[in-house]
Image 1: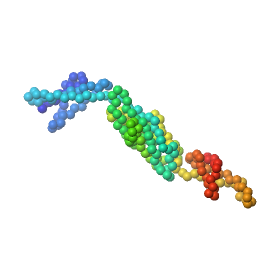
Image 2: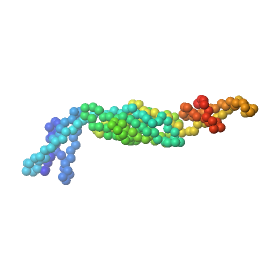
Image 3: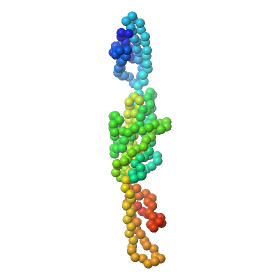
Image 4: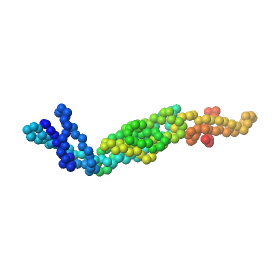
Length: 219
């Protein structure tokens, strides 16, 4: 064949470049509805052959929502630096192309998502749920915000407006003891004041002489 013409939705005739036996074309899509593109090849004897394909336009970004850590609200870095993150991502609209990938990023404020730089991938678990182990190694004590994003097969991108939060605990609790008097006669009780300072002082457990102290107030 010596030339190939393409009829787009505007019935415009286009000449396609040839490289050996491969013919290529680039068409600027200007409608939101999708359409059918027709190709016709003609050889030097005037014999023709035609083909067509239907394309769809997906101009709607996927939804990504409900990021959470289902297994933990606290990460103790002296035990493990990982926590499992789960998020729901779905591609909707009249002509959805499907969610291609989901990502997470640890950041104080909502990050941008113009490309994949700075984002870590999640894996599709079941249905619309994407999961992955987030590594908090190197972070300081406090609360970490983990943002999630999704990209569909048409290249549309979106970032969830809310972040999943988790507490980072890197230090052991500090325990101080004091008593009213360090001298007591046999058979009498000793009153101890116990102070605990910790990032996560909820429900602390203290043992004295192998016995568990029943009530402790943490700070």
